[in-house]
Image (tube, rainbow, N blue to C red; front, side, top):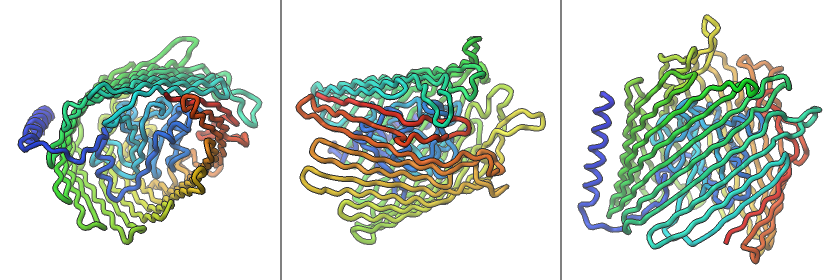
Length: 612
């Protein structure tokens, strides 16, 4: 179908179903006030991890540091504060979807998100969904998805929040947020800044990290206006800008810098009736970066992308059945010094059906078809089910087909792009068992993922690196997790949580493990609270990774285990403040996440959080 006719049809469907939603007397449905309600309603059979606002506030503002200590996601970080990418279950960074209030914000240039350009301080929560999600979230959600949420509740109390921290390597973090409510208008405005000289002494090497300084800033706004009990109008805005000097491997290298400016704006209208909820999202996103390849010569290259998104969701609920339609249209336009002018239109429709068969058993299935003028998009499907054997034991299964479109860089990069690429596709299955008792939560998940036409940059017959659809990759593994909460007394409590991931990610042509995919990842955390004091001990482990496709055992990044300590005390009479001291890598171990990119040793940070 021609793209322009598809777009017209989608707009007409939006108008028709929205008009039909108001034909019966209005009654309040069990409204979900989340910008991404799909995350809560439609995840049957899939593993999911929630990070609360309280847990976010206990960490520094770096999203990478938070996620790698809370989840088994593997992060590939080119030095501390430098480019950081996340990968689930042996997949690549471009196969991880990142969603901001329900909208995919992966770069149209690279297909991935640099997690060191995202700050956590203004988020209300973070949700991590493991496994394929292309049926709802579109391209890129093959390994898993990370959801960054900024939500306002129906009732908001006036509050000022101030958070500041100072740490090793002359690192500053500052955040101020203000929220209030005037009748039916609620809002939260916030700004945050993080900067560092990042000139740490490299353990076991007689030198400092050079040219590693960085700064990142973010301005955020969330506004909600209740038009009526059944209609909510919301506005979300994020403006992120910063600059990073990239650390030198050798002192003789030219000094480089990367400047980025990202804007995200979205209007959302949610309407509810007796059995129907509808939601319309209109978003405009921009990304722009400038890379200075030699600061002495001041030479640079620039790329930028503007993306427009329209998404309409219609949910029909009746007794034990939920039926949802999602219509999505996205237009992206890119240009740059090293990029031929690029434009892409993608439209898609998803149908989701969920049924609660009994009190113990529910299931759901999803169908999706995307269309665009550049590719023949695969037909997608998913099926999930969960069965409660007892009040404590439950079983879950999930299977899905997912895909990823080639990026603008893959197709249009000057002297390297390949316009003949086809989308990656993947078939994924997972099964798990959950156990819940008083304060105890146990989970064990096994997964299998068969990926075809994986895109890799390889040298052609002329020695020029170009992207090609070359590989079939199979990933499989196990993910056990544990959380135990124990109330010792009225003023004492403890929590222990742990995650482990065993992952095999094999290139089927060679039977070799993919580079930068560890077989083993793990983390654990113990938190003890007594009166106004809290003590935290966290442990992070990443196994060794190969750096060459032939799995040469002499070319690896060695495994490492880090131990962090945190002590905090609340002062309720002083504007409900909390003062904490955090020590990372307390044993001052030397380690690398990427070959030849040493990470810092011991680092100390003192943090003050107050609200009034």
